[in-house]
Length: 259
Image 1 (tube, rainbow, N blue to C red):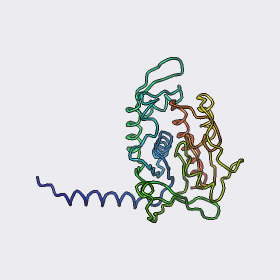
Image 2 (tube, rainbow, N blue to C red):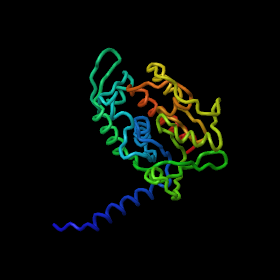
Image 3 (tube, helix red, strand yellow):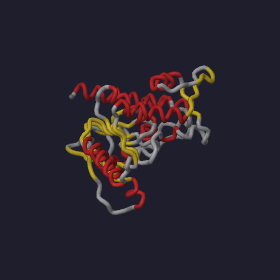
Image 4 (cartoon, helix red, strand yellow):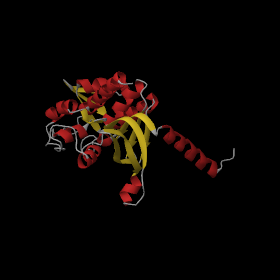
């Protein structure tokens, strides 16, 4: 069987640009492919909601890959373990309410299940800005991460979305852009920044802080705690998973109320 290099190139280019073009308009655009962003996309896609993930790095999974200090095991509480079980990730009880999972199995399985559910995932793409019209965010301004890293003067492209999720982790990058340009619609009007480590408080707060911070823009995962000044929680990931499910529920309700 003959293999032609240019046919390989054509297959990649044509299939990728078809996928990208089909997602220039989406119902939900998620910025960040960590555990909260992936989980949100999974639950949305499973409910037949069109969702796209834009991850600036080569790999997805955020901080989950490295477990704690590069020991690639993660911990979840009982509620988080139930979500992992739904993905098909095996867990082992360490002590009451502490469950351990292999980080590599967890990330690879969540990525696979999210893609199979129908979410479209684009890595190596950064969201550098949002489009805002009449006081509501209506889309994302995207560029290649390599352009951002090399500080090249290259104009971006835009996509349209009914709702946007900032799941960029500790930097809360998208919320920061909105704060700088038009101001967030939250009591403090500004990003407080995450507090010091307190796993129990951080795990509870990340779910409570998963909410809309500007019309059309929600925060999830560690970005939510960074916006509202809640503690970080380290290598326990149940809150990240629960936050992802929570933001999916909030957005789904909004779509049902205003189809």
